[in-house]
Length: 83
View (tube, rainbow, N blue to C red):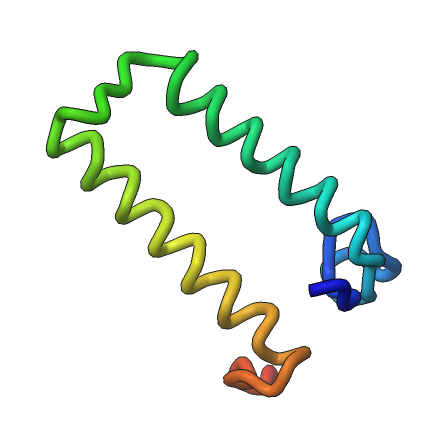
């Protein structure tokens, strides 16, 4: 979308904004790592229901965690206040 967003390379990491180009590169890197973990490490079989369920549950949990974390910067749910 061409907008700035948080990435591990921002200052401060995870809170500051990175350019859209950095975010595309970070997303591509994550896609490559995901492919390597799924296709090259272990014995992932896309036809095996338990493998797909494990992958789907992992993706859902990471997505929910990311939504809660980054939502605080973009009008989403604010995390609970610390004492």
